[in-house]
Image 1 (cartoon, rainbow, N blue to C red):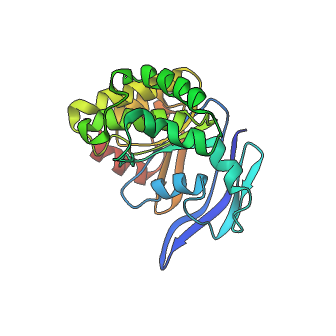
Image 2 (image 1 turned 90 degrees about the horizontal axis):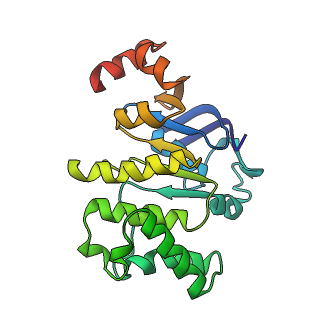
Image 3 (image 1 turned 30 degrees about the horizontal axis):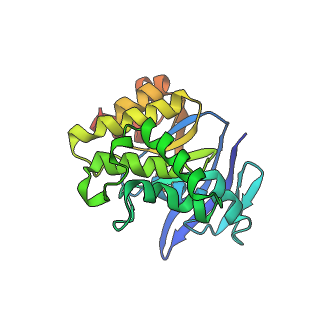
Length: 241
C-alpha cells in the first residue's frame, strides 16, 4: 500500500477534528472523501502532508512516517502534492514562474529543466498559451489548472485535492474536473475532498464518508450511493442527491 493511516487523532483546542481514523490507500487508487461540513475531511488531507499536527497515531506514506514528532516531513512533502480551494498562486509571478519556482528551489532543477517540465504540464492542462500572464488576469478555472500543474511539477506520487472546485463559477468547474479525470485515468493516486457527486460516481474507486471526525463508511461508489449502510450516510445522501 502507498498510504497507511493508523489510528490518528487531531484536535484544535476543544474541537476533536479527527478521532482514531485508520485508512489504507493503494497506488493508483482514487479515493473521494465525502461528509458534512466540519466532519474532518480537509483536516485529514492536511494531516497527510503535515500541515496539521496529529496528537496520536501515525501516517506512513511510501515508507516515510509522520507521527506526533513530525518525523520525515520533508521526505513526505516531496511525495505528496496538494491543491487547495484557494489557488495560492504568487500574484507577482507569471504563470510559468509560478510552476517553475518550487522545482528550482526544492528539486534543484536548472532554469532550462524547470521550464521544459512546466511547459509540458501547462500544455497538458491547456494553459500553455498563458505562460507569461499574471494570475490576476486569469479566471478561477485557469488559476486552478495552473495550481494543479505546479503541484504535478514536483513529481508527486500522491495528489490531494481539497474542494478545488468550490470557489469556482459553475461554468469553470468542468474544466478543472476534466484535468482531474485525466490524472485518474493515467493512474495517479488521488485523495479528493469534493461536493461534486457526479465526479465521485464516475472516477472514484472508493468513497470514504466522514462524520464528526470518524470514518463512518468506506465502500465502492455503486454500493455507497445505492445502498448506504448507515443512517448518517443515508441522511447525507438524501440532501445531496
